[in-house]
Image (cartoon, rainbow, N blue to C red; front, side, top):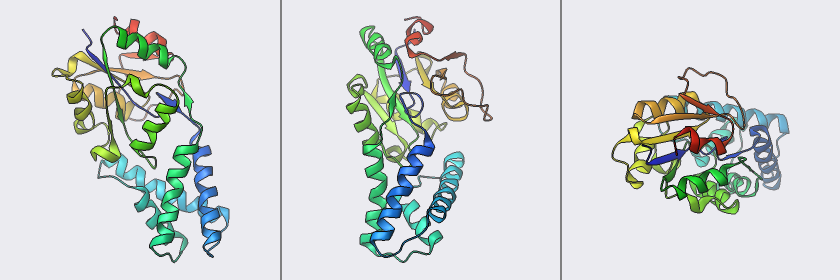
Length: 240
């Protein structure tokens, strides 16, 4: 019997085209750099973002600690050979916050109905999320504005926990807060085989891969025993 369900955030609860978010980040940096008297062309800033994201992805895959917006800003300023003081550094870091708060993310179809069904059945619900350049506080704000944050009783975002999936330490804070003593009585829903599916299976949880935003290509991780493209199908798939 399933007692609790945890959800990934990106491409599971909310989604957006990564290229669109990257474009907004680049726009913000171009504006701040020009205002500070250190203009750079768009291609150079895009290249700096790409190089920085490669650093983040290595940290993500190897689970070697977090790579914050401040870290990314320092790296990209060096990449762009931009001389910056503390105030300019803070303004560039703040671009990530501005974009994270203002970008229009799409709520997954059927997620509100799914969460309502789970909660009505007494299932406890949480979030386990690998955050990139948008931290947990901002992502919770996105969920609140889309009317579904209140459904979640607990969460663990990597910028706050210090751990990425598939590490058990990424899941444990949420499971403990939900009162889950036996992970086999919990399910995790996410889009990524390497992080979500492998992490859930490694914990002894039931893994569910969600393909409603994208059917992610195989990335070296196992397939989930349940694959669905509509959250409204989840309760029945879990026997609820």
